[in-house]
Length: 102
Image (tube, rainbow, N blue to C red):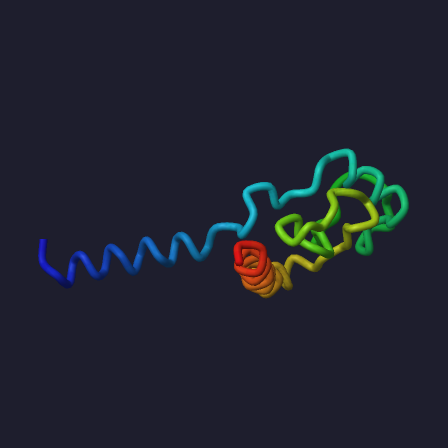
């Protein structure tokens, strides 16, 4: 292997790690989502259950930052905003990990 190949492999691995969610359990529980949908119907369809085209349910305060997995900590998020929110969540969780470790 050449040095360039090793560097390229390491860069690729770093990108994959950065793309991973900041917290292993980043999806809300099914029970919390069901309770949230009953109180906050889908913005696109007005339905309190089933699919919501163009939207997803996400935590307001990420679980990695001591956010709770309850309906009160959930919000509708436009799918178009998912990438930006994922970047923000990674940074937010990284900050809280550093703060918690010292």
